Image (cartoon, rainbow, N blue to C red):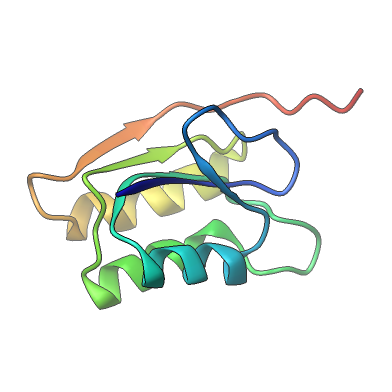
Length: 104
């Protein structure tokens, strides 16, 4: 079982597999059982967002044990949170923990 961290800028936390893009994240989710899935929303201008992962998880019903929304984007955080809150099984923990982005 793995932990997955989707983010285009932030460094990978210890104990997580890093995905910089939606494509990389989907590959990890499809090939592994996921314990914790930590999501950013913005993944670069004009690129797919973390919401696409939320949609995949809901459609496929491949829920991890815990989902963390670490995005600093308030719109993206609310969008992902409400979709998951309405659709996730009760045993899946949903945590909101925004992380600032260090640009320097």
